[in-house]
Image (cartoon, rainbow, N blue to C red; front, top):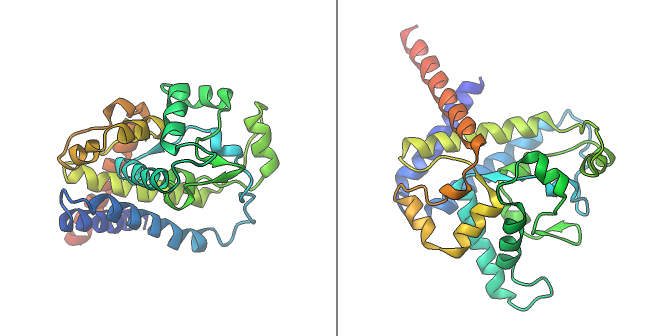
Length: 250
């Protein structure tokens, strides 16, 4: 079942890439599909679970390292530029500057180091995420059942945070299908550290065009787990191919 779902998702992403090759609409089309798939399916997948503790005003997990695909980063870079243009003189300061300052503080840090630093995400303001509509799959797929456990974990205590399995699984399935489709289309299909990837994209808008031409323009922000993520996507793809072949032969 999971293999057939993966293949269906991958085909959807591949169809978009075929319709919008090297187009300015590519990034928005891919991310719209990825986010729509997640939001449309997470309710039914998690309906049997207890209520989530995640709500506005609880940014406990927003000091964790966030990874994202290139389309998610380029979409968010556009979103940030739009906010900066509309509100250049807010008390928040330019969002692009907040991102770059956060990148200087967190660049190169792993999960454990980031948790110990406890530096909040540059997009958390008064406990709320100001880029919520454009947040990446990693944020959408992290959901807790216990706010107190989240707070204790981020304070450095050794506690186990009960998180939603369906959120993690659905995020992984969609992300892997997207990465597999990107790889098949000759585009860089890695995962990148969000702050650093955004700093690169904001400094040079041409990085999006370079990525659409097949270059890994966010390579400095690529993380080791990206190799694992890409391998997982390829394994999904091969497993789906084997299942399809077996079905044709039966």
